[in-house]
Image (tube, rainbow, N blue to C red; front, side, top):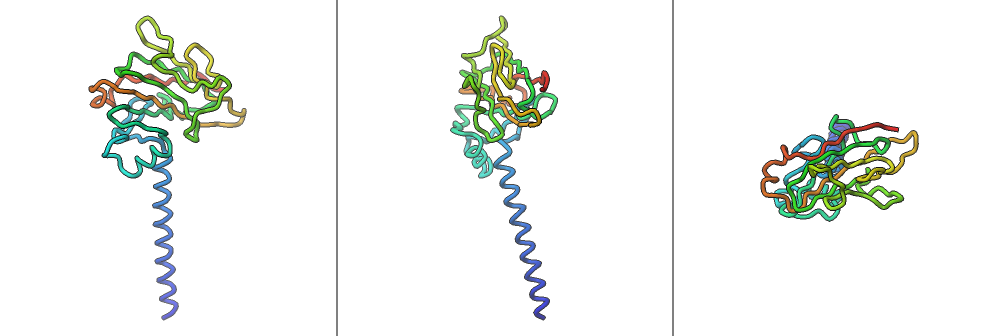
Length: 200
C-alpha cells in the first residue's frame, strides 16, 4: 500500500517537474529569440503585434529583453535580420553587402547588435547607418557594408572575433513614421537585401 502511494507521488512529481521545465524552456526561448518572426520579408522578419495592444505576454517580454526603448506601433515598424538572404546566420567573421532603395518612411536606420542584444563595441563608436548618414547613388539607392572593421563609405563594424570564434549578430531596421501603406504590405516591402561577400 505504502509502495503504491510513493510510486504515485513520484510519478506526479516527475510530471510536474517535466511540465515546469517545458514551460520555463519555452518561455526562455520565446523571450530570447528576438523581436518575433510572424512575418518574413527576405532576410528580415517582424511581428506586427509589437508595440500594439495585441502583443501577448511573450512578445512584451521579448521587447523588454531585446528591444530596448521600443516605440509604439503607430510610430515605428521594426524588422530584424539574423540571417542573410541565403538563410545563413550572420557572423562577425563575415562581410555583408546591404543594398536598398528609397524607403517610404519619414526616417530609417539600420543598427548592428551583438548576441547579447547590445551595441557591438568598436574603435570608431559607429553602430548604425541611417537615412541622413548614407551616401546614395544617383537613383537614390544605397549600399551599406557590414563587416568586422566596417570599412567603406557606409560601413557598420561588427567587431573582430578571435580566429576560432564564430559570433552571431543581428541587424535591426527601424522605419520611423512610415507611410500608411507600409503597415498593410510588410511582407512585400522592398527592404534592403543582405548578401554575404566573404568570411575570414
